[in-house]
Length: 292
View 1 (spheres, rainbow, N blue to C red):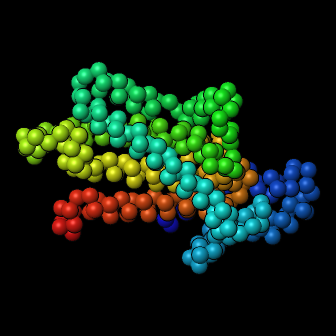
View 2: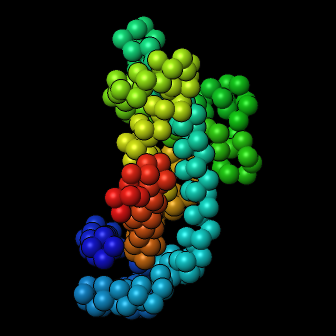
View 3: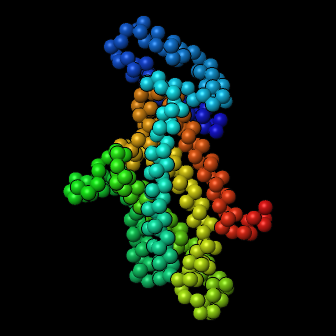
């Protein structure tokens, strides 16, 4: 966390652009610029600014936005729920699509259905969000008029951004589910279950899928961490007021403290999600609990 905070602090100060000039405009007087720079503490040496930021951070103080002068903690608290909603909705879309698709491909391996399923998966990975998002807007919002173009004012507003993010994640998950199941389906206990007369659906869901869930859970954890960090492109396309949207605004305005706080939340999300993923491992596979 300290490394991430320090690296972002240095990079955001190296990037060309002056927050004072962004706030006052190019036509502002030199005296006014200097006065504002002193008021914001930007006239101090870089190391002094960094040390002051670390001290404040250790006390739980994220500082104030250079642009709005509002408390950054309140800004993050306002934007974080929107990112949580979008991440969970996208994850739900991905799981609903990927699990049946991957299992069906493994069940019908080396058939036309397997190739169609993996072809759809490849298509989902290949289509970038910045193209799929506007395409969904054109069709469902402008042509059919079923869903809102952007914003977060209604429940239906989350459908298009969740589909945009969820389809790409579903493509990755479907391939992982298929690969994991193909390894498991050749095990002795699977042949024993079939020899007992169990249906193929019971063999897949009850016996094979649970043992194939560990690598799938890993991908889910990593992707959920990325989504919680803010799906920047999707949030910009749909004007979704989440952490990613806030981060882009802060970079454009050279709002140093807000950029640092946003990246801090991204890092924190990855750490927390990875730890939760480790805990889920123990729930899925009892052998991990015994090893501990």
